[in-house]
Image (cartoon, rainbow, N blue to C red; front, side, top):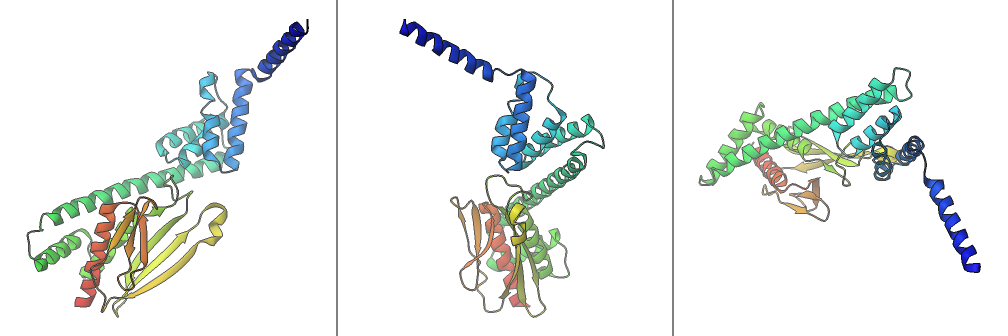
Length: 287
C-alpha cells in the first residue's frame, strides 16, 4: 500500500512539475524576451543570445521589442548586416513614439559606420598586400635600389611633399587597419582598444600618439600619451614579434628595445609596419 501511495505522489509531483513549465508559446516567448533583455542590461550578450535564439523556433510572431534586442546582440557579435536587418524591422514595426526609436536609429548609424570602416580596412589591407607583393618581386635588386623602389611605391600610393610625409601617411593607414582590440569580439564600439597616430617634427623627431581607449563603465579611464623618438643615432632595422597567446603583434622600440606599438595579430601587417618605420627613420636621418 505504501508503495502505491509513494508512486501516486511521485506521479502527481511529476505532473505538477511538467504543467508548471508547459507555458503557452506566447507566454514562453515573453519570458525569453524578458530574460534576454535582462542579460543585455547586465552586459552578458552571450546569455542574452541563448535566450533570444529560442524565441522564433516557438513558431509565433515575436514582439517588436524582440527584433530590437536581437539586433543589439548581433551588433555586439559583429554580425552587422544581420543586426541591420533586425533593427530596421523594429523601426518599421513601430513608430516614432516607440520606446527605442531614437536608439534604434543611432544604432543603424553605428552599423553603417562599422560597415564603412570594415570596407576601408579591407581596401587598405588589399593595398598593403599588393604593395608587399610588388616589393618582394624586387628582392634581386641591390639594397640601395630596393630602398629606392620601396620609397617610390610608397610615394605613388601616399602623396606628400617628400618621402617622409608619404611614409607618415602610410604608417597611419596601417595603424587604422591593424587596431588591437581586446577580447574575442573585435568591435571598437564595445571593446577596449589602442589607437595610434604618427607625426614628425622639423628637428627630426618622431611623435607617436598613443590613445588607450576604454569603453562602457571604464570610459573615463581613457588615456592619451605621446612618445618622442629622436631618429638620429637610432638603428633603422626595426624589429617586431607576434604572439598567439596575446592575440597581438608588437613593434619593438628601436632605441631601448621595449614594447612600442601593439596591433592586431597579423604577421604580414606587423612586418610591413616595421619595415615602414625603418624607412621613415632612414629618411629622417638622410635629411
